[in-house]
Image 1 (cartoon, helix red, strand yellow):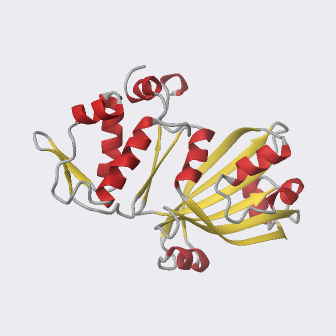
Image 2: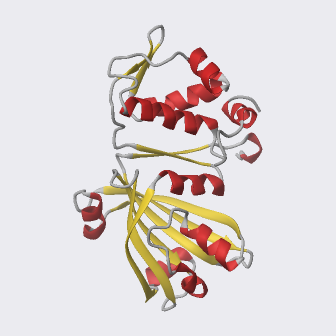
Image 3: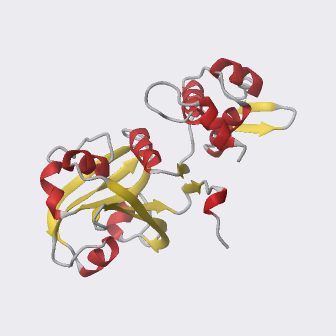
Amino acid sequence: MTGIADAEQHDGPVGDDGRPRYLQIFQILRDRIEQGVYAINDSIPTEADLCTEFGVSRYTVREALRRLVAAGMVDRRKGSGTQVIARQSRANYIQSMGSLSDLFQYALDTHFRVDSVAVEPLSADDASAIGGQAGEAWTHIEGVRLSGVGGTPISFTSVFVAPRFGALLHDVVGARVPIYSIVESRSGEPIVEAIQEICARKLDRRMAKALGLTYGAWALRMLRRYIGANGKTMVCSINWHPSDAYTYTMRIERGGMVG
């Protein structure tokens, strides 16, 4: 298979954090625009210049520039280069997932503001959704995920942690890494897979208020169940994303295609 995936693999990560180069380049260019290094109406360096500066392929540079376009910060026109049109990214948030490592990076790139932590029995609806038993006392963490500390709300988030792991979450408020990662590392029980379900639902009053939206607004509900070796849910997160401010992308390899 050729294209972006091959280019990312060839170029490797920048620095020690293991992030794909296109993502780091995107963040570097975004920071330069926000700091005024590239002013409004300025053209940023050409693809060729960026390839030379960062030592990467054109595929990698184009993916970084694509993200700047999606963020509403630059405009790309054939023959005119890439022009800065805004100092700040718009509210729309783009999330690209292909593995648990992508989810881990997502947590590092954003900020989860924890508003409440409680141990409470599962309702019948929650138990059905997350794979638990109604009445079981799970740790329930709620808050808002932001684009950064004090940044734009990305989602209203609820995280449910199975009863046997509750004691591991004494310092979950302010944690920089995903909650599933905390549970996995401290318990010594590996997460073998994550099952994701996506559907459209309307926000209730509490969620809408937390996100600064109108009650009944549509949202994309993303439920992820993190499964242990015994086939049971260890952690479940439910993320409610405003429907007009969130894009989810997924790369499907040829070997995984059916139909």
